[in-house]
Image 1 (tube, one colour):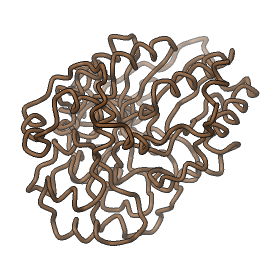
Image 2 (tube, helix red, strand yellow):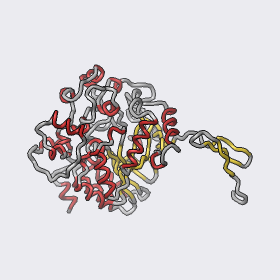
Image 3 (cartoon, helix red, strand yellow):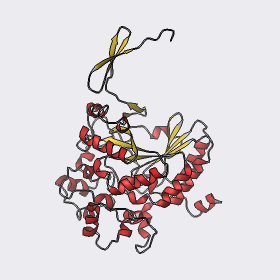
Image 4 (cartoon, one colour):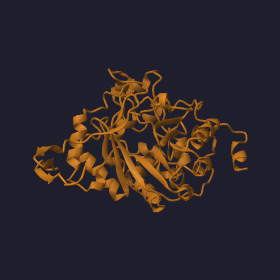
Amino acid sequence: MQEALLLADETEPPSPLSLRQVPDQTIYNLPFFVENPQSTAFRKQFFPKTSLTQWNDWRWQLRNRITDISQLERFIRLSADEQEALRGERGGLPMSITPYYASLLRADDPTQPVRRTVVPTCGEYLCSPGEQQDPLSEDSHSPVPGLIHRYPDRVLFLVTDFCSNYCRYCTRSRLVGRDRHQHFNMNQWKKAIAYIAGNPVVRDVLLSGGDPLTLPDDKLEWLLGELHRIPHVEMLRIGTKVPVVLPQRVTPALVAMLRRFHPLWISIHVTHPDELTPETTQACERLADAGIPLGSQTVLLAGINDSVATMTSLYQGLVRRRVKPYYLYQCDPILGSAHFRTPVSKGLEIYQGLRGHTTGYAVPTYVIDAPGGGGKIPLLPETVVGRDQDNLLLKNYEGRIFRYPDVIKGYN
């Protein structure tokens, strides 16, 4: 009956774009989010008629996203490079920035890390050797549209092609933000669920997209409920950047719904310490208080977070907010990503600068998601440096060498 009500007169999940039709005067029972002074000043300067209640409404934030150059020029002074990228009709990944996230951007600094992640530049239109539209070969591991089955016991379920913000280095820029929805509708969801239900080896389902937390509560609840009822699905995960770019979405109602589907884990895409605002802190606290384990995933980006100091600040800040740094990703070689990618040696340098110098809880696993569909491959500085007869020679975080007795009689 629930499914019939959900699917009646609707064959696809409602696009958040349709929220533009919701009247501004609609009153929602919204929780209060503490604003930081920066976003307060931004709201009063650029949205003087917007109340704090409206600003804290995630649907208002979606309706008022910055999506073109005329809107963006109200808030920041664009560099020549940014202007050229935005004025060109090149058919690339569209721009979308929530007003909340726009409040974090520096008006006069095109080199600001968080600004570079969301404002297009001409570098993304330059293709370099080795770059591909689908470098991880996700499409070739897709048994049904929207579902990727690369690892034996887990699947990646792409449930929407919509994000509130579009990161300029997005691995799925070929799929998201184009308002097509041909692969992200209710019929596709049902086919993916049927595939999962028919494959008992699948014990772990990761919902991604796009961003699953941009779906309305009832659609997300239905989806989680259908997956939760499959006996061999032992855990559900959600990959999202919403707590960072749209923290107002993490309402008490959403959290109350999510906590019904334990074991549920959430991986949050966090890029830079500037994103750890009071609003993001509050969103993470709500999820953690509901018993949802939180992990972070960070992409290593040139000139944005490629220093030990920046990563130390980010990861220690996340741990204080009860978010475990999980993966540090080498940037995928998508088309037009050369200006974002660092040498692998830089990632190893950062890992070495974290390990032993801060708590292990604040040290993620540094990985390359191997081009061609090879999966995530961990990268580690060399710590086993040789042998001295029956002793293993090990190098610690200070570069000192230690011996470990590595022979146990009778063991083979």
